[in-house]
Amino acid sequence: MRHVGIALIVVGALAMTLLAQGQAPSQQSEQQRLPARLSGEFTPLAKPDIANGPVPRMPDGHPDLSGPWVGGGSNNDIEKDGGLKAGELPLLPWAKALRETRKEEDEPYLYCTPMSVPRVNPYPWRFVQSVTANGLGTIYVLHENGDAGGVRKIFMDGRKHPPADELLPTWWGHSIGRWEGDTLVIDTVGYNDKFWFDSRGTPHTTQLHTIERWTRTNYGTMINEFTLDDPGALEHPVQLKFTAHAQPPGSELMEFICTENNQYGVAADIPNIYRDKGYGLEVEPPAPKK
Image (cartoon, rainbow, N blue to C red; front, top):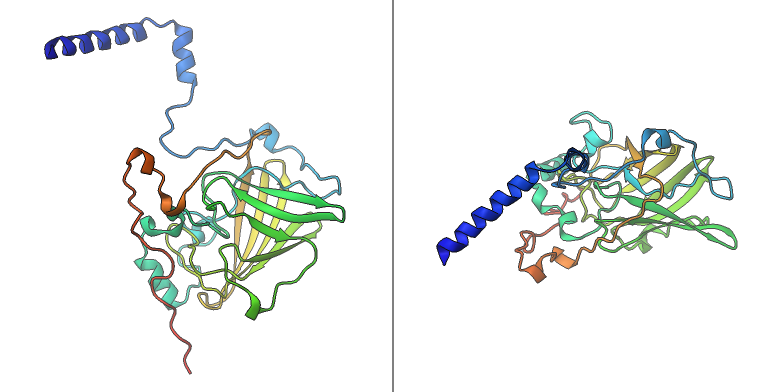
């Protein structure tokens, strides 16, 4: 019976080969036209003739920043992604030493924790601009993957940040926004110190303060001029620049569920290499000298 089974497999394989060789040219060309098997991340972008088109606008005249977008922040290396040369990020000695000890497979993002700011990944994200009876309301930021179900909120109602002693450190911090012409300015404080700026492991502290200036220059391009200020981890504030690209018209975010502790394969008995790893600051920053 074993020999019969093997023979059937061989015959079947031979038949499939002959069938493939006998395909009509149109069928073969159609197969070649289709994209190769997805072995990595790929997100389609708007074609040049669309991307170079005019900036769409909201009824109030402000640019429509909704997206979805790809990019616009750091991912592999915040220095390189933000337009700096290697070593230009003014990390304090303790922060630089900590970054050197971190490994990419230990980063918090792999544990289904939020990416926070200015982190992005190859998956798309979008601004959702709510409108109330009083005009533009809260802007929400949704990520297809990597936010652990959390939603970033940017308050556009003119409120101020809470007093420093009342801020509860969170993954997304406390964000307030305003329009300066066609540029959306987002000011954020109150971050926790758990997320990394990139896969390289660039750290920060709860003193982190960021200012984002988002400007849509045409249909397919949006610039993020980013001010990074963290007296606890940086010698001085630094300016970075990121570029986001729009997806084709009609694109929407897909559903991507990342369960707690990244138990993505429990139902299929797939081992999870991240299960027992930790995240965040492995060492505390040195105490200030008295």
